[in-house]
Length: 366
Ligand code: BGN
Image 1: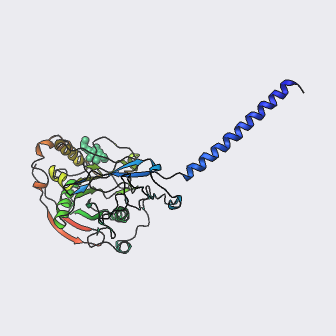
Image 2 (image 1 turned 120 degrees about the vertical axis):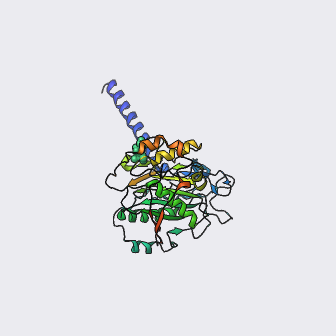
């Protein structure tokens, strides 16, 4: 046996040993990763401005600040359970009876239900805690936010059923006090989404003056992640940041369509939406302009949380006049909106799953 042969064998042996050691150390770190605590969030709160609403900003925290029991963490639901240590600024329970800052039963991403949607009556029996008109408040604690969900609507009953099933399930996990307002446009005129939202906002506070904010919600958008909190925002919040049909990308920075949240005060400050946008497009851009004029800013949750599935439907006819009204919008803010709103209430019913408002909308002078 030559010397060089022995050297080669020794080298092979050393390399093999190194590979084995590396393999075991990798196994060890993978095992530790499995035992690692889940991501922990802290809520940053800006105080209760004028007693009307509180700010909710989720911030990821170093989970080592928290004691964590792996037994409390269900891998199936990926549910996060927090046990806080005193003095770290986050609290899960409180003595005032208010709901916790972080709703305890959030699951993160979940599959939205778009098939096997029950009929309205069967669905109503799935939500026995709903008050007439599709209103709800958490049974065990005092909600921090009172939110009117305003849905402009016409002629999409299957979408409405899918929306109601998903939204009630979703909102009740968030421990928000809410009511769902379906504002339906009567007649065959082009759809006026913005005016319907003005009507919904006006009617909701007429019914319940203690609402603190509105969430304007297209009926075809279903939230996919329950960390997308439907709370009252400090700055107007555009909520439908990433939609599957837009490949989960924001089409442009100022977009304010789909789902958006504004406090009652912010909505008043911009005089609501313009009433002049008949047919598809532009009304949300006009609102973005109003916000800018009143020095308000569009805020957003991160795109991996503010995710939505869009239900399929045909393309609506675009409004050829939208450019004209968009360009002249700034001039009209003071006289075209909530203060010029007119409508005929054709029907108003407190249904089990929602408040139904059927309206006839007149064409107002520009
Ligand atoms: C934009 C529409 C918005 C709509 C988004 C997303 C207009 C105004 C002309 C510039 N804006 O193009 O209303 O929410 O697409 O679909 O059409």
